[in-house]
Length: 422
Image (tube, rainbow, N blue to C red; front, side, top):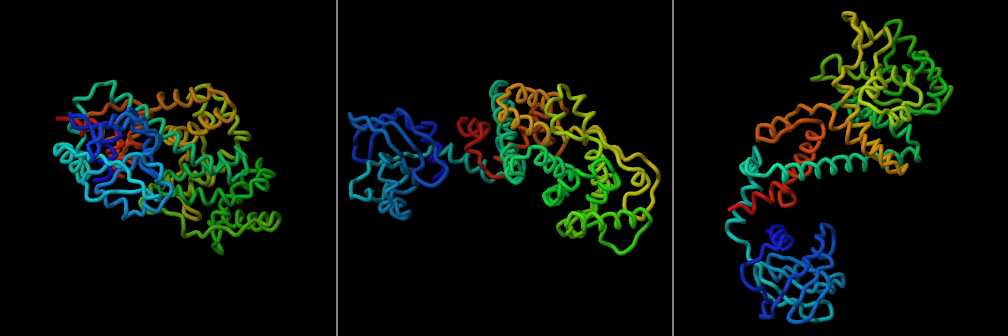
C-alpha cells in the first residue's frame, strides 16, 4: 500500500484538519515535490513550512516508520536531504546518518479509497474504472487520450533511436530496419528485425536495380535458401546467393526454423512478405527521403504500395504452386506500415531537423488513418470510449499496455477519477 500513500501525498489527499508532525508541530504543504520512481527518496524538491520555518528538500513515504531502518536509509547519505517522513503507521523514531531526527507525518488512507484501490488492482477482466467512464466529461477523456497518444509515439521514437545508434546515424538504414520489423506484422516482427540488422546494405545497394539479385540477398540471408534442391527458380536464387555471399563475404544466414508460419494466412507467410519488401526496396531508391517529404496520406500509400516478382504470384512457398494472383499489399496493411513506421520517423526526423511541420504531419496522418481493430479497441469501445481514428486506437493501446497490464492505475487519469469518487 506504500504506493497508495505516495499517491495521496502527490495529490494532497489529506485529512480535513490542520496537518502536524507526530510531535505536534504544524505542517503546511506548499509543494509536494516531484514524484521519483527511481532510486532515492520518493519526492524531490518538496517545499514545506514546518512550524514557522520554510524547508526545501525531499520527502520519503513508507507504510511503517521502521521501514526507514529496514531499507537502510539511516546509513544512506542520499536520505540526509529528507525533510519529512510520511507514514501510515508510526512505530519508531527515525534519524538521518548523522543521528539527527527526521520529522514524521502520519497520513491515513480513507477506507473508501483503499477499497477502490483494491478493486482496481484485483479486477481480472474489464478494468474497474470502466464504471465511471460514462460520468467523465468529454474534456477529461480527450485530455487523457491526447497525453496517451504522445506517450505512445515517444515510446516508438525511443526504440527508433536505438536502431539509429545501431546504424551509426544512418536514417535510411534505420528506417529499413523499422520497416522490416513491421513487415512481420506481429508474429514475425522480431525475426524480421533480426534479419534486417544483419543485411549488408552496401553490398545490396550495388545490385539494387536487379530484383532477382535483391531477392537472392533477402531470401539467402533469411536462411530460406538453405535446402539442397528445389524448383528451377529456387535453384537459380540459391546459386546467385552463393555467388553474392562469396563476393561480398556475407555473414552466415539465419536459421530457417526461426520463421513462423503456423496460424498465418498464406498471404502473410514470411516468403511473401520478404518478396514484397524486396520489390519495394528494388523499386524505391531514397524511399525514406520521399516519405519524409510526402504531404498526403495518398502520397504515402503510393510510395509504400508493393507487389512481388512473377514467381510469387503462383507460389506461397518455394516449389509449391498455387492459384495465380497478384500478391500486392492491401491498403489496411499499408496503413499499418504508415502508422507504425512512417509516423514515428516523421516525429523523430522533424525534431532532428528542427522542422515542426513534420511533427504536425505525423499527428495529421494519425488522425486521418482509420482506427485499428483489435482486442484492445474492442474492449474499450464496449466500455463507451469513442474511437474515431488511429490516433485514438494508439492512445488506447498505450493505456492498455502501459497502465492496465502493469496495474499502474494510480498513474492513470481514469484510475484517478475512480479513486476519488464517492
